[in-house]
Length: 395
Image 1 (cartoon, rainbow, N blue to C red):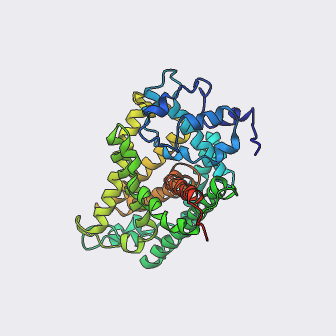
Image 2: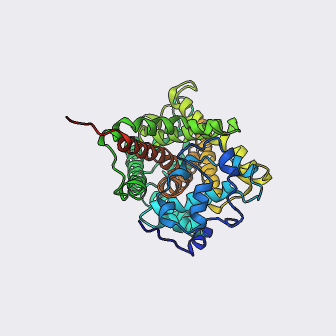
Image 3: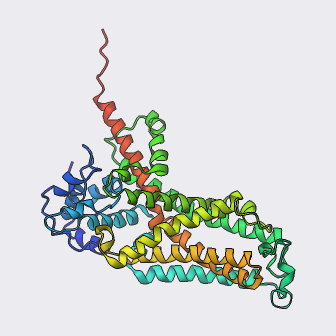
């Protein structure tokens, strides 16, 4: 089977952040020192070699990249200072753009102006929708006490002019579902494209139908626990990563699936499940963000020395989401209706574009691509075992 070589492929990769891709001369030191390297997963060397040689199709179908957690151990031991960690991270951005059939991921990764414009544009739409259909009640200025409940907190679902609390809540809830369906639908369609590019289009690989069921546990297990990351030298990296992932996942479930029981008029005690989960989600985000922001400014750790514009956009959006959510909570507990309304609107104007952009197109999509890549790798191994199985002999 002929292999197509694209001699200009490296120019495409440079748009995604790869700069020193030619410095690597494949001594194999990075692969030998990586704790995640396995017999059939020889990264970073194999992936970087495919990129250097212009083997575009092979690189696109290569799932080894997603076995990497970009801990930076490979960069520490590189004798050429080629920074294989950052090269791998840049190729990950490229693969993410290839999986995305809309082409928007490529625009967001290769143009900071495009990403900022999309973020601001969606935010303005959210502000406009509130201004047109859910404006603040006039009594927020003239009679704010009307919006205070018996516990001294703000009745958040009654702040809108002419709309009852339950109706307002379900308008927001249905809007959450629309947002989740758009983001989830795009991500799921991109995952199907990932399967096609890395597995299904190769007709020489025959996956046993039973393997799709028997190997599925790997997807769930690696998504929930991310055990490969624990093999890296920096164990705190796994702890921070898993705390962020669980915190964000809990936040997403609370605001999308459980909003009617989470956003209530009653101010529940601090030990209630609503507040405990909300506090954990906030803690999970902040405990990850603070050291990452400090590390990116100090530039001492290999994995934080080089920052792509989308890295900062993600950090800023996630941080503003957490801070605006904290502001809503404080104003609500303090019995400040006007401040609660405006901070709530601003919170949604930040949260919605973050989810619509990060989930299907950039950073958050990696939480899905990585366990699915592990699942695909397991399916390929199952196909290999099937081919190696002895053929039964009949008399």
